[in-house]
Image (tube, rainbow, N blue to C red; front, side, top):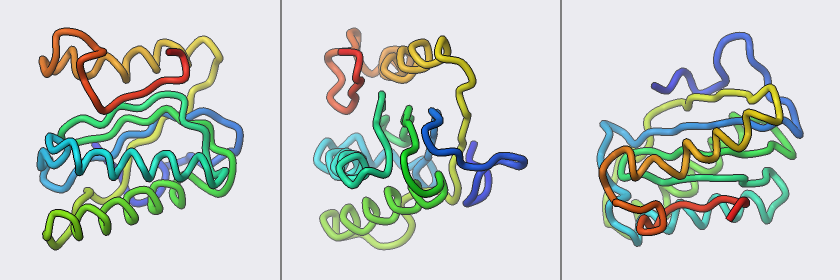
Length: 149
């Protein structure tokens, strides 16, 4: 799923553009089945928004991956993802007394081209736990959010 540590070939980061980003844990380890570890990633998503780097429109943290619908405000997508993944890995490794890589290298990015694409993308993101059979109602899954609540 992930490509290199940078954007897909032919892409560039464009501020104020909306992107659907996906990052996967190393070896698809289901680390975020542990709610406490998942909340550390959530804290980093919120920090990125508070720091003015990006606006989170919708996200879901599945046991082994993250889907994030985001409007880029500052810097590049590569810098944003490097920050989120690096800071969350340090915090999770310290709390869980683990070592080594937490995230696979790189990430998948998809730039949304039309305003009409945004709401269906958000619905796709928040419905991931339903499709995966983790819950029977979206509201029962604890690690997601959307500005359209």
